[in-house]
Length: 292
Length: 243
Image (cartoon, rainbow over all chains, first blue to last red; front, side, top):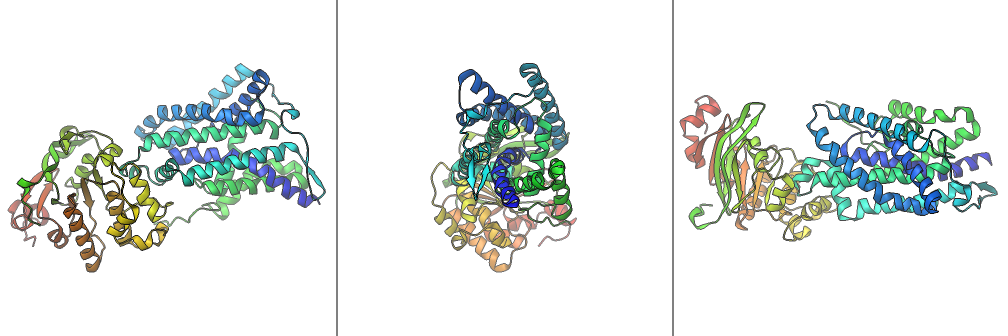
């Protein structure tokens, strides 16, 4: 019974982890950079949900939608600000790492100033509270409600990417920005929009992170970034479907560890990154690169 | 071939174009004019500035000096996507199709910003890739990938196409097919600038050539005249007979 519980619970939880990581993957696709402030954007999403609930009595389910346009604009603006400078740099990857590390520190400091250092939580009854019962086992409302909101969100994102004109242009820009520009695509604008979408997906994850992690605090960002990074490496850097599948598998691993070796469960992200690098460096869905 | 240029419309005018990289003049005061349906060969040894000229006209490099006039409009220094939509299109020496998109999606994505909507099926038909429409890119041969590059340029309803070393690595049959396609493009009014090392192929597809050396124009005229030009022979083969 414990095993079934770990698997089903892991899938429900894994859907959250898929969303947690997919935003980081999107930002990577848009600009070929690792956003070290990803966890901090998630943290801001959590505070956004907290504020919307306590100030305007808005349900976290609705907050998931409200944070999207705000963070798309925020991400787009940031992209337009930094992308030209990164492109002019001799070492854009290193500069982006330093830049986003700095951004992470600034967001964390500002969040501490504005919200204080203590964690803030949302009441459990701010979302449906009934447990999900499957095969005689009860599963936390947080898990199934978050999965019920996140699954359609991921579905819409995949439809956007694969079935819309902007999505098609995004895929072209991800493949090769210069070729895309020569094909008439305003690659800078499309990258900016996609970057903003990455931020929005992170903020949506933040709304549900408040429930999954039991609260939101200014210092949670870096640990969340590590988890998201482990998932996108496992699923293949830049591969959206790979990230989603890897997120679900990560959830199962994490839940199995929670059930059988709980004191070791926090090591799962690190073990996953190391194992991926050793066994399949290109990740689950990656193509093997030919060297020389 | 052999169109009377005086009767056709000027599509592309490059005036005194100069491109500088860290003080080095990769392109030095180059001028050329291209007419509707004309095919011009762009030749020169490695490092002569051919690709710099293509990249500058297509907006990938900013010129230090000079002007690019497309169909009477000054488009100097415009961004590549603007120029592609305006009608300046190109293929690459090594085709880099969008690898996560199918063959038809590769053409579709290029057609999104075309001023005149084109039929993807017709475009694929023109480059003989209609049967491969739903293929993933990995299934295409090198020759098919080059034809896909042409299809993507066609999908933007181009006025001018820069064809960058299309012939390299193709079999004689494939070369003949490509030459026939390019002739068909010209018949529909598209002007071509063909960057090429393979002189036999050039002879099939262009009526005049433009020779660059060290970023400067050293010859303009027919290929036959180029082959007997002393300066051209000197830069290509140190004075030996090019033909």
